[in-house]
Amino acid sequence: MLTTIRRRFLAIGTSGSVVAALLVFGGGSAATAASTTVTPAADAHVQADFPTTNYGSATALRIDGSPVANGYLKFAVSGTNGTVSKATLRLFARTTASTPVNVFSVADTSWVESAITYSTAPSIGAKISSSGALTSGQWASIDLTSAIKGDGTYSFALTTTSSTSRSLDSKEGTNKPELVVETGTTPPPPTTPPSGDPVVVTGGDIGCAPDDANYNGGNGTTGYCHMKDTAGLVGQINPTAVLMVGDGQYNSGSLTNYRASYDPTWGVYKSKTMPTVGNHDYGTSGASGYYTYFGTPASPQQSGCTSNCLGYYSFDVGAWHIVNINSECSRLNGGAGCAVGSPQETWLKNDLATKSKPCTLVFDHRPRWSSNSFASADIAPLVDDMYAARVDLLLSGHSHSYERFGPQNPSGGADVNGVRQFVVGTGGAFFTGFSTIVANSQVHKSNIFGVMKLTLHSTSYDWSFVADPSTPYSDSGTGSCH
Image (tube, rainbow, N blue to C red):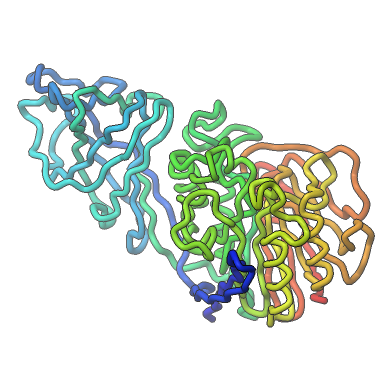
């Protein structure tokens, strides 16, 4: 069964008038992506000033424009299943440079790492792509989708036009080059409920930066940087949509880090992701890394906006109306972005008043309630509007733990007609704990990674916390819409 996601937004113009728009996205039974990562079968660089010298055992690939030094990479790709949807070359930079490294095809794959020299190197073919600027100590991601067709052996050359040399880790180095090949696969039958009702996955606080001490080549360590593992859980569930509840990329949400860490993990599901901006994203001016990476879907009322965007919107999934709010209130409307009468608060009130679906879910980054210092009083006016409109669920991150509240009113008192909040800041970055457990907190668990699965029925919902196997835990139940 195909589930249709309808995204709509109400944008408040400078005159205060309300403008409505509608975008339609497909979802539901679309194929999920599988990812295969391979390191080079061979790599080396060659130098024009030493034309007969072999550098195959060097721990770095030297790329230079004068005197010319070119890098060569060879990958043996196997185990792909289905049509290649994306292929990304990841290179770890040892030097900072604004002039990019260019990647070219090499038809001859017979060269040998221990023998290749400038004099014997195979001919360089057509240019495929470029790296963009390089930052020392960080990964660069280069799109090679047009060159990878499936299983086989592929060879590439790396060049630069700069007369200042670039240095990249080789396969003998600490951070080996990687080729990440993503393919479409048939979703496993258990992931779609028999009813065909849509499933959404939520989680936030996800990707460690490549220069994080616990990054470990993207594999993380105990208690840190498990973004690859939680991304695998998303793939197993195969949701209709992913509600990413902020701070997708640490520590400052730079575009370089989004592309290097988030993109090969949770970014596999970017086409079905509905994101929200987090406080760490504003570590880059105007959250430009976040808004550039996610594009128009992050602030659809401002097509093409890449910095200081509004960042709130709504859409429909099945019988549910889903709203994203920007809980970084100090970043909007001169610091009063969530206050009564602010553009966002006015937009939210109008959006909820005109919704046509029986059930409603709101998601953001900062929780209104949390059993630690992460609770946000700034969003209280927005929660007042949610309660008045009989919103059913509020999903948040920010606190790197899992917490489930019973339905409650804006004062935090138990109320069967109130808003139930889930805090799911367990996307993989690192742990934070609890202090005094606040009223109406039904479940609170720290030191876990995982995602929450929500099945959205016509008048109810089922939830299930799906844990990273390294931190086993479970919580599940069902609730009714108001």
